[in-house]
Image (cartoon, rainbow, N blue to C red; front, side):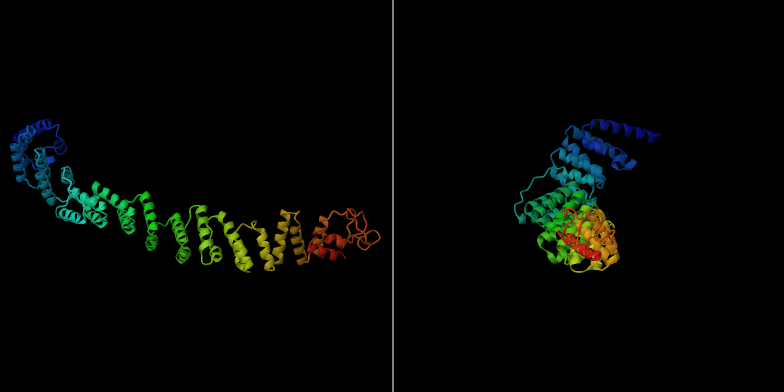
Length: 462
C-alpha cells in the first residue's frame, strides 16, 4: 500500500514537474522518471525531491539554489549521464559555459563517444581563435588531442585545409567517433575536394578507397574517383584496382586505354590491349575497343584477326579492316578463318578471291555463279563465271552464257547452217549493225570490251 502511494506521489510530482518545464527542451528530451533517468526506484525516490527543487529554482532564476542542488545530485551519481546533462544545462542557463564544457568533457572521458554528451558539448558556443600559421595549427591540434571533442576536431581540420596542411586534416578523421559524426563527414568531403583542387591525387585516392571499404561510396563518387586516377596518371593504381574487380566496367577499359593513347604511352597501351578482353554491353563500346586494337596494337591485323567478336554488327568491321591485308600477304588460311565468322551470303567477292588464290576450283565456281546471279548484267561477273566454267571443264556452258549475252539475229554463228557450214566458215556474221556483211565472229566477239573468256570461247567455236 505504501509503495503504491509512493508511486502515485512520484507520478503526480513528475506530471507537475513536466508541466512546469514544458518550455524546457532538455526536460522534454530527458524526462524525470526513474526509467528515463536510468535510476533504480529507491535511488529515484531519494534524489527526486532535490531534482524537483533544483528545476524549480532554475525556472525562477534562483542560481544559488539550482546550482547547489544539481551539484549535490551529481555528486551522488557522478556517472549518470541524464543528471550530468541537467547540471550542464544549469551552468549554461546561468552563463557558466566554461564550467559546463569542463563537466561534459570530464563525463566524456567516462563515457567516450556518447552522442548525448557530444551533442550538448557541441552546442556550447566557443570563442573562435584565429589560426594563421602552421605553428598555431599544430598547437591547436595538440590541445585537441589532449581533450578531443567534435568541435575541436572540426576546427583543427578546417584550419588545416585553409592552410593546405592536408595530413593534419586527415589525422582528425582517425578519431572514429568524429569521423562518423556529421562534422566528420563534412570534413571528409571538404578534404577530398581540397585534395583534388591541390592535385594531391594520392590523398584523394586514399579517401575514396576508405569510403569504398566503408560501403559509403556513391556511384557519382566512384566515377569521380576514376577521373582522379586518370588525372593523376596513377596507372599502377588503376591496374591494381582492376585486378581487384574495381573499374572493370567496359567504359572504364575504353576510357583508360584512350587516355594512354592520348598521352602517347605506346608500350603501356599495347600491353594493356593485349592483356585485357572486356565484356561489352553495347556494340558501340566494342567498336571503340576494336578501333583501339586496329590503331595501337603491336600487330593490328593479327590482333583483330584473333579477336572474338561479341556483337554481330562488328564482324564486318573486323573483316573489312583485316582481310585486305591478309590477302595481300597471302595469309589465306587466316582469311578463310575470318570469313567463316560471317554469314555465308556476305562478302562473296572476298570469298571468291580467296578460293581463286587457293585454287579451290569448285568453290570458286560456286561463288562465281552466286555473284553472277546477283548482277547478271555485269560483264565482270560474266567473265568470272565463264572463266571458272572453263577451269572446271564446262566450256559448253561457258559458251552458251557468252552467246546469250550477244543479241544475234537468226542462227548462232557457231551453229551449222542447212548446208553444214557455219556463219564463221562462210565469212559472214549476222550481228546487228553489220547488215550481214564482213566481221569475222572472233573479231566481233573480242572487240569493244569483250573478255578473256570470250576469246577462249571464240576459239572453242572454231
